[in-house]
Image 1 (tube, rainbow, N blue to C red):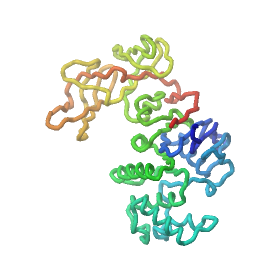
Image 2 (cartoon, rainbow, N blue to C red; image 1 turned 90 degrees about the vertical axis):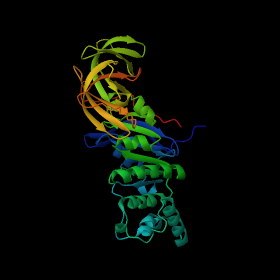
Image 3 (cartoon, rainbow, N blue to C red; image 1 turned 180 degrees about the horizontal axis):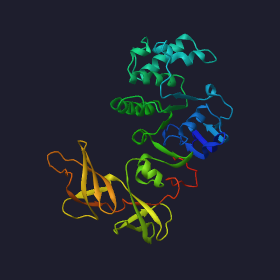
Image 4 (cartoon, rainbow, N blue to C red; image 1 turned 60 degrees about the horizontal axis):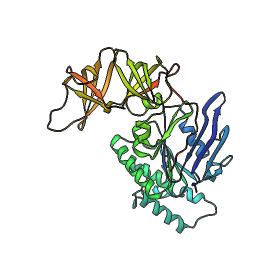
Length: 378
């Protein structure tokens, strides 16, 4: 028997006057999943989050939580809690008072002993036991974020909504909190929905990534699927780094195409959608799929213009005549002196199957699918 999704959107559209923020979205999220809504500003991800939370109502369609239509249900009646980007903590209350605020509004009323027990449990869950009497201004940014999490979790929601909760943290603390959020979600076993425009954050934290653009769901799947098998050119370009090579289809064979690049080089590429002979395409090549050699063995030849040394890896900007600049990423092996220097000639190869060909967009740079129904399968 298929489990009832924790969250389900059925043909959901949201309009603000003449502006359509979300257009005909269908998707389902299974129980206890960590899902990231990923996309650029204005893509509709925060609107979707607010519709789950009850802060907005759909113009059309249904939003269901655990099989129940939420139409007309206010936020405080939904089995959902939200952690806002700026945490929205009360500065005049201490940690315990912030966490217990929602519990004290609950009906029927909880006893003082029950409230104290649940607040203590929430503090332990976020590793802040002993911090209950501290004021908010006495806490670090990471500790404040944990208080916001504890306040959301103490009400035992079915779904926790996270609206870019790590945006205000520095890089190291953000990385630490990513790990803590993952561990916390696995420990308590409820569905997390994270809104972010940070691709690395979405890929590293979530079980599933929902990529949005222009108010539509472009692709939904596991992080490795989104990265390795992008549904279209927008996903390939937006999620992670990629090289886009312009060319035309020179030959067709099953799910493969031969693409003639601007310099006349012909390469074999996989295709995700039907393509026609002589059709203008963009070929996506991830930087880590490129191999560099000083021996001259490679499909393309170029000159290293810039090198960014990152410790375990190095990134190279390579100028290829007739094509332009390509980004390559290579592992650095300590003690082997395997770094190329700016000005050095290199040969560029790539693994079979690495190039992905997509139709070149004619309008706004996006290549959206018409079919918007997607479902996560547990």
